[in-house]
Amino acid sequence: MTGEDAGGHIVYNGSLLSLARHYGFLPRACRPYRAKTKGKVERPFSYIRQDFFLARTFRNLDDLNTQLDDWLATVANVRVHGTTQKIVAEAFAAERSELQALPATPFDALLKLERRVSHDGLVSIGGNYYSVPDRTRRIVEVHQLPDIIRILDQGRLVAVHPVLEGRRRTRVAPEHRQGRMPTRSGPAASQIVVSRSGDHVPCRPLDIYQAIGERLAAAGGR
Image (cartoon, rainbow, N blue to C red; front, side):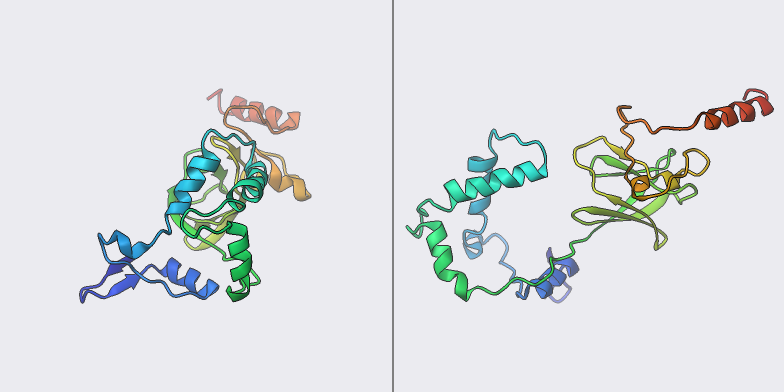
């Protein structure tokens, strides 16, 4: 997230500075190999991994968040903190009036990636596959937000998809497959998901297969 220029000055990552401006804080870099300058900011992550996540199962993100809320209310926030010797929820309530209010809108986090389009017109992102229109160039730019995937071809937005949960799933937008998938109207058209394992298959009218047969016959069966 940080680095140094030729003069030894600290240079912050642009995304970090955008986050800092949104939430109104100033980043402060710690000296290398000086663990004591970092405080105990990483200790809570170890506590959450070991006490909450360890051996826990959940169905999806909503289920995970529900379990987390329950764990916070019944375990984490009602315990006596090992360092302050205060109940976490009570200490937070006492400090709440001194805390800065959060912005009205959440930070629009953006991860920019470069991806190659496969021969079947799909882009691999986070273990899942998302379609792009026919004739899209082989190299595209991907903008990944918490719940949206945007795909750009030379700066032009060509595809928008909701982020798929799980792995090895495929989302194919019907309008991306001209001549190979039927055109549908309405909001359901952008929600068709085709799994690579074949458990979700789009419905196609029989005249599509008739047209394919006629095309093959005209080409001599090739």
